[in-house]
Length: 48
Length: 485
Image (cartoon, rainbow over all chains, first blue to last red; front, side, top):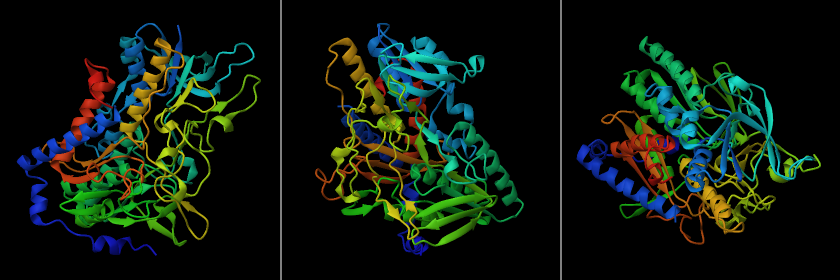
């Protein structure tokens, strides 16, 4: 029996603050920089 | 002068061609054979499929690029390999049939000194009756498919605007499909677009997948360290499905697609049907239909290729249980075990085993996500094989080969919805390594610091940035080689 509906129904929901932060431009500029630095580090490691 | 023939001009083949030309200049001949005249940045087909980008924004013609760089281009399809040559010559050769409208159907036997098989996948819609654009479902696998899907999506939106209820199903069309990440991304693009067009309330969005858990993505899921806890891609993905009110059907093998109805079997053996108004289901992949012959003309296809049509390379293909495989089984140099001047890269090489745990239903149906080989590792494979061949041509014929195992490479997967700067949202994941290595990372097989997930506008900007950056690189614009694969 597929119980995916139960799993989804009990999954944590983001708070209003989290949802807001996902669209907050200054905060997202920081996240953009962090994510890209992390990605670049990972790619550089693969290029060694 | 040696001739290097590259079969395929996708991410791995095209990357290999550009790097070879840069290294070898005009000292050796580079020939690219591809049945398509265009290069396609496939990750952005998702945006074409919801009308956020046009087809022409994700493709460009290859011929002018190759002309400018001095690379030979044959618009043709490879049909057979002669790695030992034929009765007339001991030099390796490949049979090609032209798809170029000016030479349509012409056949040629092209000799080579080195051959790179980068043919990508054959979209195996035939594995499921009724699957695909020639059947009863849609696809975003090619820019053309995505454009057609976008038109069908527009019709559904119009019907929703008239007040009709509609069911939109997105997922995979067979129990052994790969690319669940792309299906996941398209699901959330559809959901985002329905909200943007103010018709979300009358639409039911269903994600139909062969994954055992949400967040598996064919890589066995991921674990992240976040805010002092180790959390999983499963929990993170389930949360997103709850937030966006998307229904999921897991562990499904689609048996057939009739007009308006999908029939599928689940891991517990139950057989179900799902009525739909719009269904985008990805097909399973297999290798291009290449035959191989020895110099006497005997068929050696099964020696060179795995049963699924992918080229056997320097991996450990010993049959073993899922629990017994290790990261060491994965290929490092992508050189054929039988012929040292033959390489298989990108989707064309045969993975030694699945990454996600394969499962079988009580009826004996295999429901097992196949391992993904995304753009980032495919590009790296193209580059290292180009470096290996260049070293062997420019220095010593037995120069050591460059290595790039998927058990030592990371990948970023960005599922982005919307295509504008202010109005997008994306779920972005990085994982290192792609193939879990439990010796190095006993906890989860991956580095918890470098395996991450986050949702937000910033991740969407990254996807946009990669779109423009990789198209710039593929067009071999100035300093293209500084952009890492």
